Length: 382
Image (cartoon, rainbow, N blue to C red; front, side, top):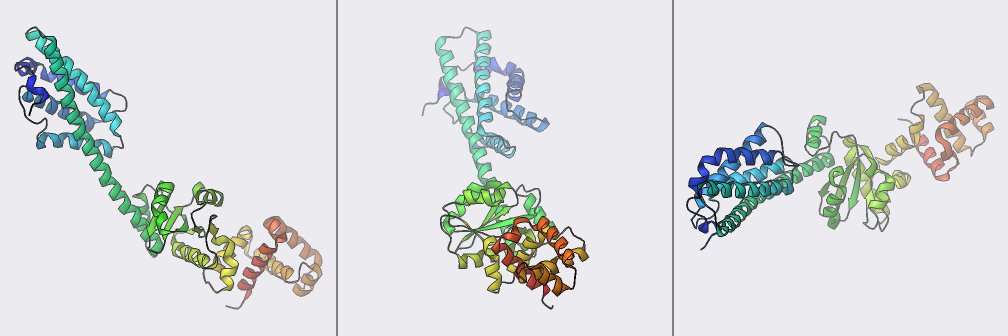
């Protein structure tokens, strides 16, 4: 089998060997200074080693039919490609560096022969063909290493993301374990998560669509996307992103309550069949609570009474008692005053403050019903 370096002049090694140290320095420097190249002592050392190995091998090939890279040399460049992947640099930088090396190798070889004797046009063409073919072999080895490392990283990344999903879905793990697992997938921390139930065939798309913001667990009957709190987990964003995906969105809860959030999403899916528009569990807490779902009422209570959280304990209690009475008496201030044994002006003051805190909820029939539900729940005997 003919090889491009079979036609190289046999005196190429004699001409180039004395110039080899200078050629290694020149090519290594040009590669280091190329746009996008790495930095640091290790990178410089790796580049010098790779250039020296490549030039030595190129000279050994002159006049032979040997394959370009025996396994031990090929592994040097496979490792170089893998190192680029670990540094999050793509093949473009690596291939650009090899093109630089190719030009400098051809120039160095031609000049070295020219100092020894006249060089014919045919020899320059043979040198060009051999140099290009040799650099192509190096590029193949490098890109193989880069691809191998990316596959390994993707596999490890998938494993870590599955671990985070399992920890959140199972519950009961220590904060240290969860934080460490979350850091392993690039999450700076874990606070609130939003679960999304999807058909099982949507799992792959969810991984791609939500990328670093979510992890996906496949459960056979469905897939659960767990989104960390952020712009992409807000209702408006999810409404657009999940259109046409038969999704059920659970409530945003602290990560320690992720199993309860998933449970609420599951119970919501039993109430409402998801379709083109995503179904939000937040819209169905009252029905779930009335159907005996234990996790629904505490979440609904927290949501509806959140505006009163900043009040002093005694003041908050007085306002809640007044609000419950007002709701039961259909807004009659005199009836509230009579029931609570307070002056009507006191009732008016408390209701004015409640309106400042709760806003339009006091005029919304659904919100009023949910408020009455949670207040009745709070006032029942322990």
